[in-house]
Image (cartoon, rainbow, N blue to C red; front, side, top):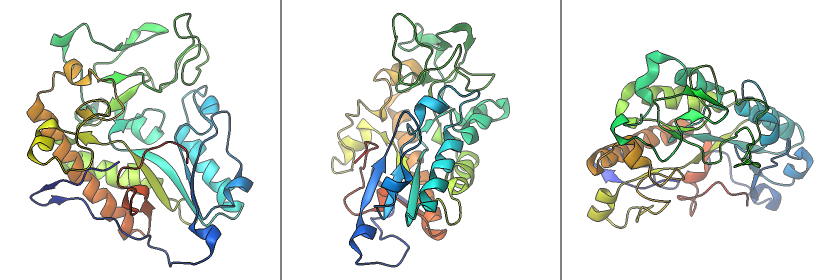
Length: 301
């Protein structure tokens, strides 16, 4: 999901063909996003497509119950099985808007106080928040980093008997923070950008196994949309301005002003530019570089 913003040097690449040679074999021209929430997806089914992309919810029943959660590792295992079955190109999910702690690469930074500047925080003056800052099963396990529970595994309760991923006894996203969808603060600049490009993005690639990524979510600014309504993603309605697919009241809970939302959006855009270029430089690819897929979403297709 990408907004094409033109502000100074920050211009996202235009759609770009894949780095591998073209082919006229029909099966090699087919692309699928696959997700099996109860376990690994079928490698044999995947072998019927030229590109197979796996969503983060793949095998969610398993990684949500793991201690600690191991979504990142299971995506790699899925890719290994799929390549062994004969699929030419395999993509896996990554996100540089949301800091998802079920990915171990992100969790290590989230749980290290030295990197607290990587993440957006609740504004204490906005209490009570619209989302819980503590784990449902443990009211003492809290975080001052902003996070919501959209699509987040939880311990089943009477109020929420069937959460989006079941944890057993407690949800394990590390010792310091409860599970939730956290957010990167792209105003951090070079240090965060280098981590995202080199570890979250390039670190996900695996020679002859993982050939590309699905990059989910984006930032949207009402101020930028007012200046140029033709920016992809405008108007900001997924659900409102700020990060996409996050609780609609996140701006209030973080105490962010409209100019701050604009600044984060522009900084995110600069990082996306670096991400796209890094992928192409390493012979890899992503959905948002495909023609007509600039605003691809993560639903299975």
